[in-house]
Image 1 (cartoon, helix red, strand yellow):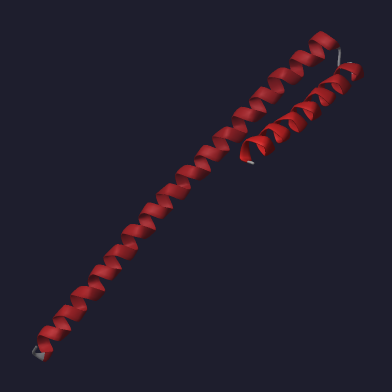
Image 2 (cartoon, one colour):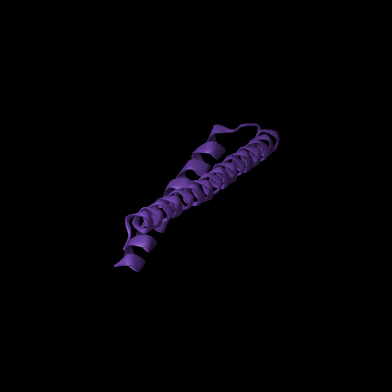
Length: 91
């Protein structure tokens, strides 16, 4: 193969690599941008739910410490049960 054809093939190969790198870069950039937006929307939704139900507990139960203690116990029992279910289902 003549030298000039080899150089043309080599340059076209390099050009294709550069184009692929740019395409991959833009795909990853938009994917991670989308993930960041999705995670921030999730956090904002969780904060809205927390504020809503905190206000409900304050107005209905007058921020009673016994209620908060019972809620904490239920949450801990739930996490233990879910861990046990996950451990059994995985094994």
